[in-house]
Amino acid sequence: MTETIRLTAAQALTRFMTRQMTQIDGTKVPIFGGVWAIFGHGNVAGLGEALYGVREALPTFRAHNEQAMAHAAIAFAKASFRRRFMAATSSIGPGATNMVTAAALAHVNRLPVLLLPGDVFASRVPEPVLQQVEDFGDGTVSANDCFRPVSRYFDRITRPEQVVPALSRAMQVLTDPAECGPVTLAFCQDVQAEAYDYPESFFAERLWLPRRARPDRGELAAATQVLKAANKPLIVAGGGVLYSQACAELAAFADATGIPVCETQGGKSALPDDHPLNMAAIGVTGTSAANRLAADADVILAVGTRLQDFTTGSWALFRNRDKTIIGLNVQPFDAGKHRALPLVADAREALAELSAALAGWTAPADWTANAEEGKRAWRAEAAKATASTNAALPSDAQVIGAVQRVMGAEATVLHAAGGLPGEMHKLWQAGAPGSYHSEYGFSAMGYEIAGGLGAKMARPEQEIVVMVGDGSYLMMNSEIATSVMLGLKLVIVLLDNRGFGCINRLQVATGGASFNNLLKDARHATLPAVDFAAHAASLGAVSRKVSSIPELKSALEAARSNDRTTVVVIETDPLASTGAGGHWWDVAVPEVSPRREVNAARREYEARRRMQRVGD
Image (cartoon, rainbow, N blue to C red; front, side, top):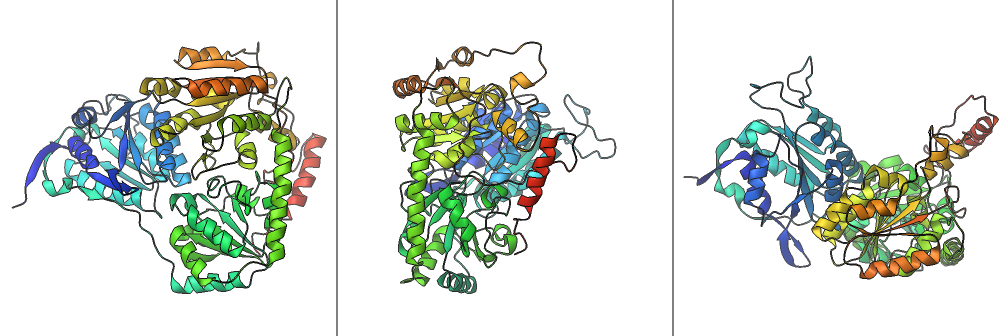
């Protein structure tokens, strides 16, 4: 006879979560790092009571914004190389829909997070309930249906026994390297409190280890043949290298073959920046060292990258008509993109097998030497861009240089949307794997501070440096208070250019007038004078506003020894950006306009579009 235990559906869910394990460096640890929760009428009675009961085994963390807490959970998973992850629960209504943006971010970036929004009453007896979205033609719809297109797996729990198959499927998705992404279990609030006799076997401890798919022999042979015939091979390293923990294999492969390596935003730090064959950033925000090789490459080994437009320069970067792309990816959808020769496998396994298959073969010596010379030339250009200055309004690049010199390559630097990703991708010199944390798949403003909190939870022993602009800071800053409350120290560098400087530069570059991006160009009765340092201090942080790069250096040195989150504010030039490196990006320019600047930009746009090579 099967042994059972009577629990509410919410109690069963939380007990199950405490029994899921993984192994990190030979040590067994819980796979769930905890649960972020903002309670409301859709989850406080059911899930709230259940979480209280397991609070020692599965810690619950209180945040100040539902989107931010989900961002923190996602950053925790990213900083853990997807080996561990977290859950986030909200009430029904705005608490739930606040998490939809975070779900989309996780979906785009292929990152695991378990979202547990409260839902309507399965019984429907008290309908319509507070915050319920009613569909006039479909009684099964709730606000949580917004999660469907941005979830890798979606389920609505309308009976307590449904927890069993739903959680089993959820864990498969959260731990699968190919399917990995957000899981949403919309949890009807009355069902959370309903009891069921669950089999005790459901709560047996389970160890989840990463699946490492080896390459198909035929695909491996085809990729090997193409590489052996290459005269100008190039590796593009994406985030999959880090998630596979294949950095050592990538370095060994590059060293053995002499093939230069470029890094996407997600893949940056896969190789140390000082590796002679690391050409650093590729694409729209790339280095000249990387992009000049990409233009000539006849074989591109794309490892763990989804080849988005910033990586490919909107498919105008790879100009060799005779090129072959080898898509080394655990996900077949990505491996076959743009007529690539697929190599569907785990990055670590495939690189090791490719190394063995290519034993004794190397890229032409002049190609490797050309790459190394380009790397040296780029390092000189980058040093000029990041050199210290006494300018009243320094550039973002100069601020980045100061942060790099003080904090060093051992710090983990984190950023997201705006102008910083472009400058950071080019200029930051990453050290250890994962020390560069960029959210540029969904490019979500407001991710930075919440993301820094999640990264610190995953890497408590490391200094987490958050780089954020004033626009993103004003969108979401509340988790400064959470970081202070939890004793999780962040160093936040706030670059204040008084508006959305990055989009303003794009607006002007496409022929538009400066309009509605910088504060001075937006409709206003008076210009706000936001005291960011005072605001950060009001949230409990140590804060300081500096007026120069030397002062910034001094403030960062002090931040190292501060006992809690520190915010350093510096005003920057909204118009300046690094001219070296970079590549065209396809942003549609109007065909007709009364502005001659737009018409000129359109002519340039049409000429650039002719460089795109999607069908080659």
